[in-house]
Length: 156
Ligand SMILES: [Fe+2]
Ligand SMILES: [Fe+2]
Image (cartoon, rainbow, N blue to C red; front, side, top):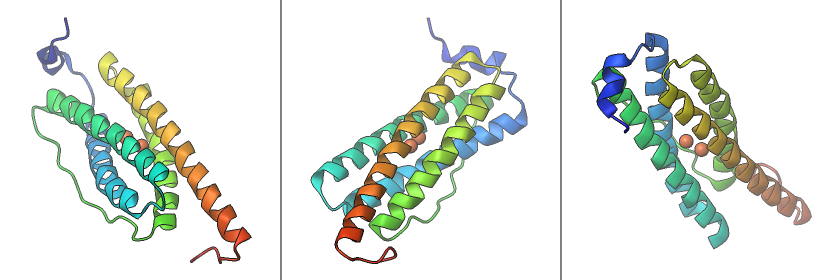
């Protein structure tokens, strides 16, 4: 059976990985806030629902990573709040880049982690983020094409 205390006493992760896990918690926390704002700005229900689904994945990641961090350190992670874009298209662009960077970041954590549970969770999350990135790219393309057809300038 899965025993959370097992990890406290067998954890051999180095400080750089612990720092990265805390950074991952903070990133998820900010994604949760920004995607709530982005969903509110969505131009239709389909996109709004998709963004809220993505946000639910981030909530799950946030919980899993927080638990991992606490298990490894015995402390609660500290998060740093960051600003979210104020307009929809800017938000999509920001989200796409952030998701793409996060894929690499999580895969790197998974590669370095010694703990199998940490490895698995970061691999799985990297896969989710890749999927999120594709959705944001799809919406970006959709809106840019629509703008071109209707003669709206890129930076509107
Ligand atoms: Fe995430
Ligand atoms: Fe994501």
